[in-house]
Image (cartoon, rainbow, N blue to C red; front, side, top):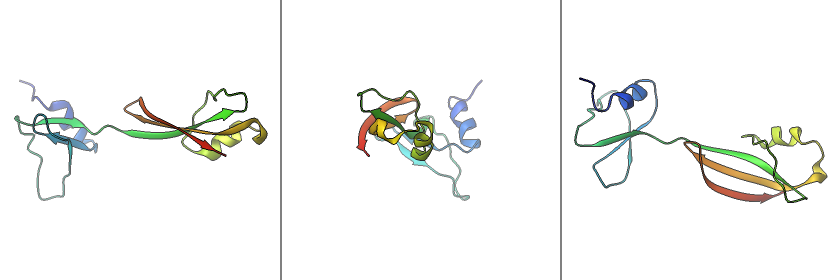
Length: 107
């Protein structure tokens, strides 16, 4: 019989951060410090901690946005050559591939 937390246990063994919680409470990071082992209690919920990624696009003077997003603004600047063509950056934050925040940063 497959363990109910098998996928999370595998991810934890591969170095991912695992979060746990009793039902209907806040998620907390679980860490292994060499002394305690994670028990993966059947009365708790577990998940792999959602990964947050921040990257940047550009907003041009025409009001359109770039089709390319980079985590490094300098790479973005080198991709779009003329500095006079844009009015600022669009900072995008995603969690597990879903956009959770967009922010305009003027140049």
